[in-house]
Image 1 (cartoon, one colour):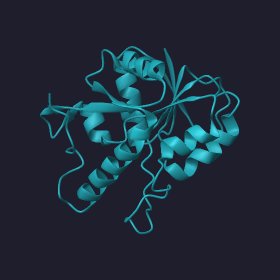
Image 2: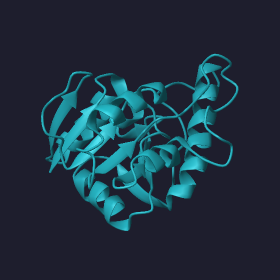
Image 3: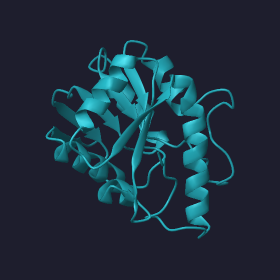
Image 4: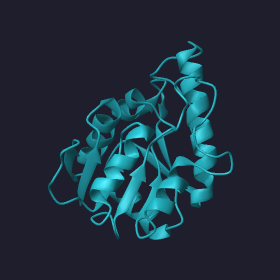
Length: 189
């Protein structure tokens, strides 16, 4: 499978590394990316950068699986999310791309835990998937088979709201020094 990752930072590289460990071909995309998009496209960018990617690639994204990893945190106040309270970044992206299969994933894990495959150096890192497309979630899970990550189905795209709140909480705890960036929430069992 071919994976295109928008974002060349720590998260993009950690996610790409897991897809590569699973035997997938990964291409990292920047602002001026002009090549064909892969079977799965990952938005490993800040939420504020999503609209420009959508604008530049809207037609190409039709029929694709699009993974949204964003946590739409208000970084000015670090006290709220910037999407409506009854929505999520993933739901807002899905509204803009109705012919794309949006999957919320990777936002409840830190780059270090994705890179190592472990939370706190001991518990297996788990990727939670939320989407209205069962086929899209299955495709993402299959693309990660062979990586050190566990994959769990978190339900419909409505669950993205809770995943984003969970990601936000984890970020604020780490930023306040409550635990390190190699720690975080683990799914046990």
